[in-house]
Length: 89
Image (tube, rainbow, N blue to C red; front, top):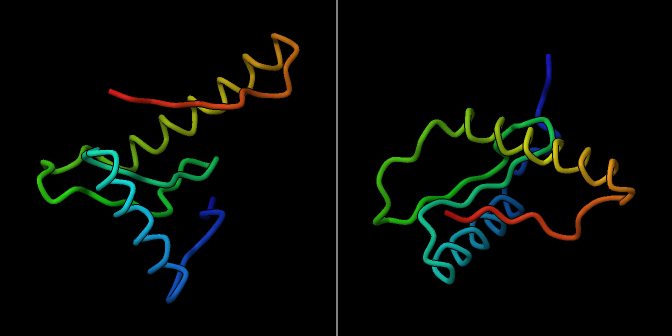
């Protein structure tokens, strides 16, 4: 069975939660999440005004798959990877 690559507790959890909240406030985004390469949601946050988010598990799996696909594309192009990968809607 697959397990998340990282689990946050206590002070670490609070610090990351504060960073996600700050990211939401500064970016005016609806949602923010940290996903590991296996597709597990490590942390997530939602703006108070945002509607209920879509299935986080499904979204995280798709984001992780997209990351892996982009890594494969970079290798096909002779690169070690891309410096940035941004998704914005």
